[in-house]
Length: 166
Image (cartoon, rainbow, N blue to C red; front, side):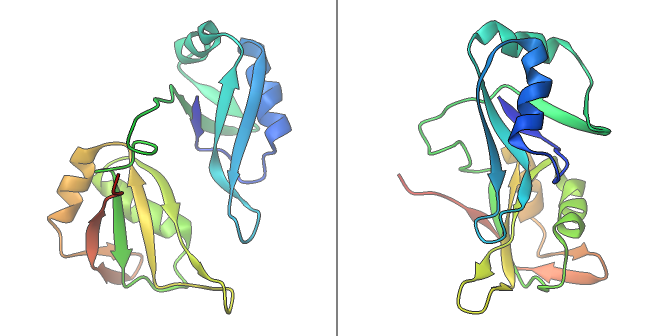
């Protein structure tokens, strides 16, 4: 399962403990930033039995440590994670912009699953570009028709479709 909307302070053990209520959990992979080690707000979870996924999805609202979370059935694809057509490159970002500001601005075009903000390894500073992953290609198509969008108090340009080659 894909578990989105997680509080950044949650641990894999806390996620495991919550989802054990729906069936035996085999593995929790909490995704973290490779440079800071901070949670990226989502995880992948594997149950021992597929029926456990159905039990999770039958429950409409999930709240974990005071925050509503968004569990979804993970779907394996042949395109390296299913991001082709759903991920955009965003250039011209101010490195001072927060991930939340970027997510809030892009949510106007569709549900944002992930914001990636690369860091320059040589100086540990944020780069002036990033990637935004949406839950649908329709959101990306709508967004790519714009030349610039408002993020906080700044206009951001250079929005391009990101595509993985096979």
